[in-house]
Length: 267
Image (cartoon, rainbow, N blue to C red; front, side, top):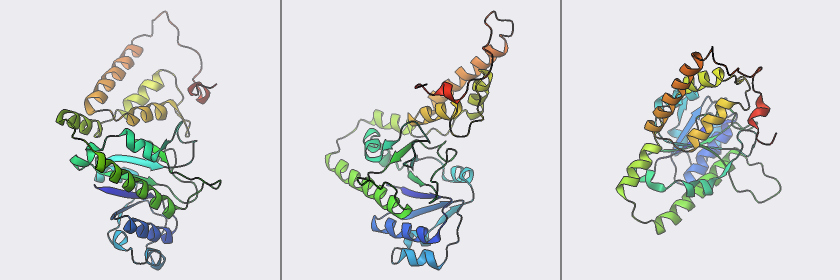
């Protein structure tokens, strides 16, 4: 399986090296840095010790935008213990159980995203990920170092893959093709979705959570196919047109703009 580790804005070169070592322990070779905040120096090589192969084959992108343009399709999973990013984080192994392993047969890569050492992944970092997951920690101290998180995530994945392969049954070809389509949502109507929500009066300026981020997360989390997203796009555009022509409608739009509290079902 094409498994990739993606480090976003990593601050310390020693952690890049120790991540390379952890990857070598687990037989994973492809290490990607996005907008690194450190140089690959002697500390990185020292941290890698004998596990230098991922470090030597290191790929670097200056921005996430360029990463998506160059890397293309794949299953993108972020790791964070911060519940503020999304309403619900998945346990990594439980998420793997919810996604059939058919994508292995079609060579779709999986990308595991890890944020910087101080604050982790930001809300903007996770916008285009399919899921945000937590790793198992059984002690009271729940904070993992970056290399620890990488090693633990790769162990969970490898252990899950071994158990799954032992009990794997044949899957019908039709189901296989359908899943591949669902795991390849290259097309997403970002701008139209923003225009639609803006026309409805939602305030999209909130950085931590707003209607656009929530709806996009719901859609990506369900792995929609390109056809499904295009139908959704048609619905959104048609709604915008109707709203534009409804100036003389007897139904008056509510005054003011919905706030963050309007997005919280508990309020």
